[in-house]
Length: 311
Image (cartoon, rainbow, N blue to C red; front, side, top):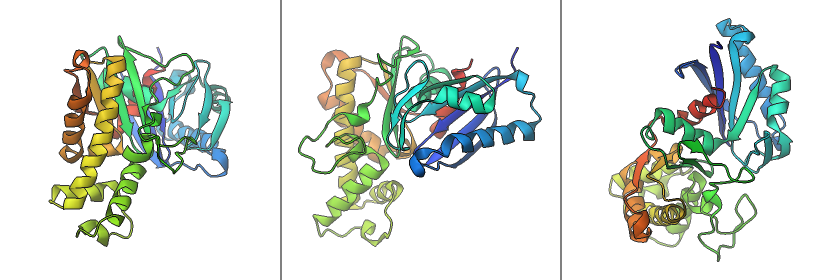
C-alpha cells in the first residue's frame, strides 16, 4: 500500500504543496510565490524542484508515494491537457505528462476549483452533502461542482467557470479572458479593489480608504466593519453582483450547498450578508433553501482535494 501522496494547488499568486498520508491527513505544508513570468514556463520545473526537496528532507522512498494530484487555474481535459490558464500565461499542454516526466511519479490534474470542491466535500464544509457548488474568490473566480458526490467537469473540462459569466455587457474594460463584463472583474480580489477605486473616484464622501497608498480587499472589509460608509457601499455592490450570480448558478444546478472559499472567503458578514440577501431575492423558488457557508479548510481546500485525485 502506498503511504503518501502530494496535493498541489497552483494559484495566480501563490502555489501550495501538501504532503498527505494514506488516510488523508496533512503531514507537511509549504507555499511559495507562483512565477508566472515568461508565459509561466518556470512553474513546472520550480514545482518539481520543491517536491523533490520535500521527498529528500522527509527521507521518503518514491515507491511509497502514489503520486501527485494538482489543481490548476483553468480548464483541464480528462487526459491531463490544460486548455489555457490565462492567469499563468499558459497555453495548451499536457501537465500530467510534463510533471510526471520530471518527477517519475504518476500525476493527476484537475481544475483548481474542482479540486477545492472535492476537498471541502470530503473533509470540510461539504461533508454530508452530495450536490455542492464551491466558489473560490481570489486573484480570479473559479467554481467547482460536486454532483452526486463526484466532480462534474463537463464535456471539455470547463464546467463551473462562473467567473466568466457576463454580469455587465456594457463594460468597456476587458477581463483577463478577453471578454467584457465578467463576474471576475467585480467580485475577485482585484475586482473589489477596482470597484472601490471607481466608487471613491465618483464621490467625495470621507473614507479611511482614501488614506491607503495600496488598497487591498481586507482594507475594504475592515473599514466596512468599522462603519466606514463608502466601504460598506462597496461591500454591498460586490455582494449584490456575486449574490445574483450565485442565484443564477443555483437556478441551473440546484445544489444543496454553496461554499465560498479563497482569500475573499474570509471577508465575513460584510460580504456574506449581502450575498445571502441578493441570492434569496433572485433565486428561483424551486432552487431556494440552499445553504451558503465559508470553506472550513480555508486556503487549504485545494491541496486536500488535489491529493484525493491520487487516492
